[in-house]
Image (cartoon, rainbow, N blue to C red; front, side):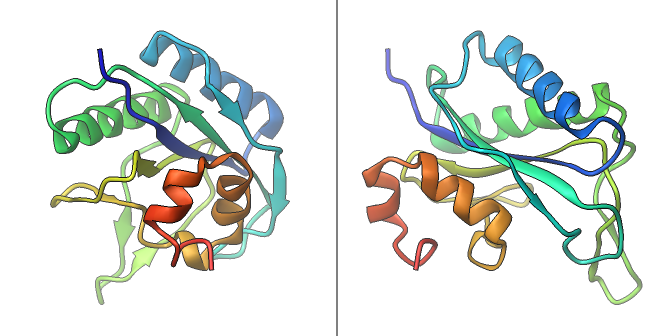
Length: 160
């Protein structure tokens, strides 16, 4: 039974932020049928890409059983993450302005897939490693804290 390292970023800037992170992890535990192998410290950062309340952010590492191809695994994880976001009250999906630029806004929870093992995934729905890790210290620093050497070696540009 092969397992794959799944690194997720959790962020929240609405409501009881610390409880939002705990609830998201509890729901992820249920979805994966396990507790995370590693958990980063929580960092507080200003909203990124818009004006809003500060975020609490963290990274977690789960090791679910690999089911199917890496692309199938990544998409299954994405579906679980989106279902948890919806269950916690996040409305809709990403919005874009008339120029096609992403519109960022407040959220109860945001779950991003940062890495799925040392693999690259490029589908219409999912790009892994997450393409903005290098620009977002709130992802990069917690990820560096919990990442295994094989991830840092596979994607040295992320951690530069």
